[in-house]
Image (cartoon, rainbow, N blue to C red):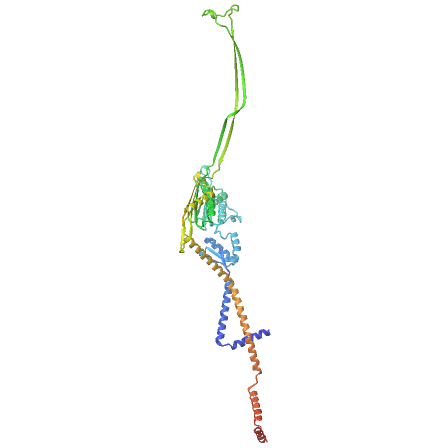
Length: 518
């Protein structure tokens, strides 16, 4: 306490000895430092706001703001109220809470419609609520796509008819609000259609998908267009194979020729061909052999007598003429051969390459002439031939099949690339500047406080010598004698000096003072 009291007294005395201008300067400097410290402290204490939700509809924005006001959370709005910002340290917590409560659905409700049981509800109202719940749940599910800001699903369920011929099929419509035009591809749209179909039982041919820009993403039809889907797959397969070949060529050319342009074109056969070939060997082996032998004997009497009836009348045994006997031998052989047979089944998978065409534009070299000017040197015929051979070997081109590889020499205009590089460099510098500004914004309060402490310590160090000088001055004032004492002391010194220099005069003066006293 004594030290503080002495310090305060020393500062007060030193302040009292300063001139008016010095006091004004010190006061202004202290006031400016105080204002800077207070401003930086206030600025650093303000919460940093981050985006909680963006691209909100009016209903969703009102719901989110009401939920934030109920919680007492400070917020800001931007983009005409479509974007809500909250302190950055509460973004993720509030986002999870509000998403779970359904605050960002803009009036879309799901199965929470059935959280409370109501008595006396008719079947018609129950069916309508069920349909609303399914529509809301599908809208929420589709809204989780990264490319979808919000979605609405509408389901049309026709009333039941007595006659099956009059019964109409249910249908559905999906309206999407995309983050950017064309953000959804055909595969993603097909996935949304299949999701709605699997959730509702509605066939994909009865589902329509549109975006808020009035683009028809999926058109309902009576039959699924499998031909178009197959064509899309084939086109994607051709593009993937072309990209693979192009990557091989670029990887080979990049070290030698940095400036180049490569194009690959493929013609592929997606027909699935199955061939069965059967071959017979005429020189087959003997499977079996059957030989049959027949023997027959025939006896005949030669004609006797004159021609006529009498000659043909059989005679008695006594008068019988001589007979002739004939033997006949017949042999039949049957041989069965087994022919050798070879069957070959060949199936050609779809996706074979019918023709491959590669074209490459390559920039030659740039040399410096004796005058210091840049000169372009084109590729020679040998260099082009070598490059063509390398490309043929890299992609496996078959020239006998009709494949072609062509290499052109061309000087590229790199001004656009240079401008893009400059723009990227400028963007990088801007990013570094912003990073430094952000770091400075974080460090400035600490630096200012440190500087203020250094200035305060320096002022205290300077005040100590002033305090000591003031103390010495005070002590000197206290020790110094008064004016009367000094006058007496001077008079005594003069009298002593006069008595030494003129003793007779001093003696006569003393005699005179004594006589006057008597």
